[in-house]
Image (cartoon, rainbow, N blue to C red; front, side):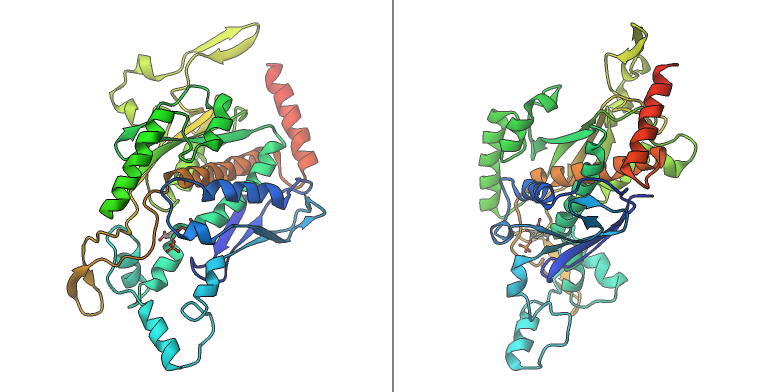
Length: 392
Ligand code: EPS
């Protein structure tokens, strides 16, 4: 990959960090835009108390000068406001061995693993008896900094007029109607607490979330991410690890709690005839076009110029007030799973995270195809390529 990044940070640690490498020089990057993206991720009906504590803001520490990338690695940081409540329990240094400190650290220790979370497998893999050492990093808090990285990828995409959107399609057993051109209703989606355009479904879902919260349970759902103006020719058919659909699926699947990722028709291809699956190609005034986009904009691992359409499903959050049967990994006893403040439903937030992950993969694919040292060089190559394919 050319657009590479690593993140660090624990959910209740001091901050989240990322170092991003590969961003071409000359890309306009401003903190306000990144902060707007961070705000979008923090919204959503069904969130827990944590979102009242955090107001995520990015600090750009390097790689950007006077609002433009300079080609060197970009370091960013998001402070955890909740850190002030965790300075003893999560300190990176040894804390004083006072009775008060020891009791506090002990009160934050978790041994009753939550089924569905990384607790159980992580405890064995990393040899921990306090699964806080696992959950602090496996927490979806990490997605805040991914959205900041995605915002920088979006700054690259903007230079090529490529833009994305996400919409929630289902929460629990309630499906929402999704209009065919969701870009036309962008404002409606952005102003909806559930990232939906279907008011009736949204009202029913809010009632459902309230009920499920009272029951001490949680909800999952699904969402769609669409990107438009993606040129034909990103990704490649020649190797498994260069296929655009494979890269997108991995990136979206890597988001906490995602259990399925589909491109275009997705799972429906299993029962759809070839004649109903493949998007016929037409020509008019020397221009190729399609009437359908069942392929979700990707054929043979290469973008085909149509919108990139991805649907993903998020499982219900495993931290539940009504706990499941589980085990204590210290005493080897049957217990109820641990509960700690959490969200009832985070599907709208997850949709924004997926938009960000898709932006990262598309920006990377664009850089692979059109070079990546400076945005000027990239644009020249891009324009030449468009001219070349239009003359064929
Ligand atoms: C999360 C648990 C909750 C969520 C958190 C993800 O955090 P806390 O334990 O502090 O209440 O709010 O999500 C975020 C903090 C976030 O920024 O999205 C978990 O266990 O995954």
